[in-house]
Image (cartoon, rainbow, N blue to C red; front, side, top):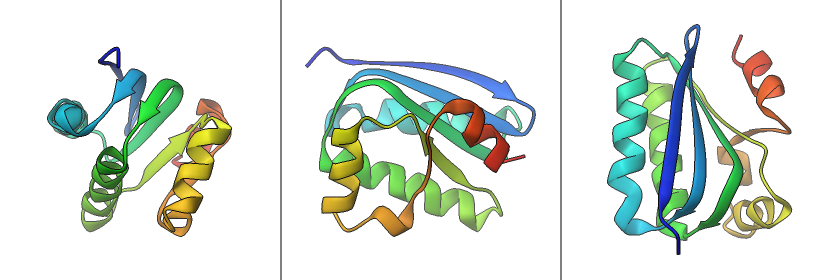
Length: 114
């Protein structure tokens, strides 16, 4: 695994987090900290761009699910965008497809959260 880089920016009331590299259980605190920083900066919604993500384990998928549930409790949403076919299969195989809002690309994700 190569580690994880998270680029974070605000698009109005949406925190956009682009994940690059690999994410596994030991990097979940880094993911949670980036999401929290977006919320503290004023984001109501979170958009995770997974285009540059190489690997994600099931614990990390669970962390994204938890972040989405946390946003929902605050009347916000979490959208995953630009998933590779393998990540789509992971979400479907885990039985969590109905728990995530998916968008084909970042612009589509931003439109969903507008």
